Length: 588
Image (cartoon, rainbow, N blue to C red; front, side, top):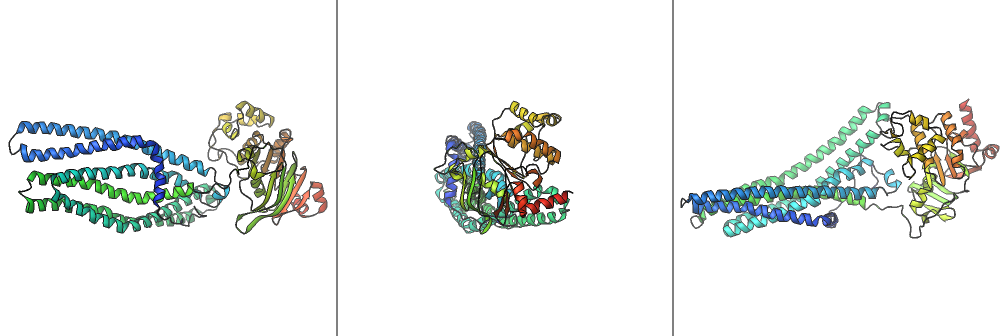
């Protein structure tokens, strides 16, 4: 998926049969079950066609000879065939549905596994709604394409061949009429297929746009209501919805050509068989044969009608498959190099001439160099947008640098295995997320710490009593990113989760900005013992919280322009001094 917005259509793909072949790999482990489905279907179809053969025999032989004893025998035999066909059809339909659900699960699992390892940059530049629709709606439709629709296509072709065999055996001349009808329909399908595909791609794009805007709006609902934006949002949604409706209407116009053509041709061929049989071939062809051929024609056109409907669905589903494969083919930019190894980090962090940009030719950091020693407590400050958070993201290797190098304990960060790196670094970001599970599960997230150890740490940090005061204590379920807690309480839990991870390097990015000053100071004082043997990097706008840092870096114009202790920077009376004094004056 290219960089995109909710009001921007995705780039159309071109049809490649290789994509469909990739999709077919999902049915390999279900080949045995699908083989049984084909076998049972063949038995059911032959049983149904034998009933027609019985009808022919009754008309041509039993009724003229008034052999009513044989008639009752034929009726009983036909009833048994109907019952057998019904039972067999139910069995293989249930098996096919089970395979279909298994493949839905397989596709979703593979897609979810892949998107978990895509870089931050992928999610920064794409609407989450367009990613979500591929994981849900598209995956479910594609599974039917490579199981249900594929199986039905082969079953329909198989059924057609069986029916044609019965028809040729009954009357070659009348069968040729049906063959002529197929040729005409095939020409119609080939002439309209390209237009139908183009319309289906348009529908997919408009549906993705609508989904993207819906997700974006729901995530920002509080902001929407705070700024009284409901009417404007409704207008945008209606426009996107109208685009989707218009795309569907355009597709329906060409979609109707298929089933209308099949219906017309079906009735025309059946009528022609009766007409030619009665007017030109009778009596050399018996009435029973003519009636049987008319019945066979109905049996013959039913799978053709299903086949053409399936082909229309195929055009739609293949576009979904292409979108899913497009996502699966997104390169995982942040991976372990061949030289990557497990490293026991001591805590030295060094940037050497690092340049980085989120968007090409728009630098966020320009040739930055600095060093943090093990167990050192440093702070990074500067104006909004100066690149402070970017530095923390680069330490966690969530993005790749444009140029320069980052070292941990002298080892280039690219040569440290990601699992080893991120296990020893804990980052509390500005926008932390609490999952819809219990407080205990959130605090244990990403670590193997026991519940008893969690409770012990909470007691040390004086938050145990607060958690115990909640309705279900540590089992209290959080909802909607912890919306059943206050902003400050959510941030306390995120702070705890970061500390509990027990990393070698701790990074706090505005970790206490939503806490009241009393809670903030309490947590900082109580956690000093727990972080004293760790490298601590703090980003803070409130400079009063970092005055005791061993070293402070001030970032401006994409570079570090000042560094030193609080006292040293205050003596310089530069950027740091001005920012600190402005906050002091505001606080008075």
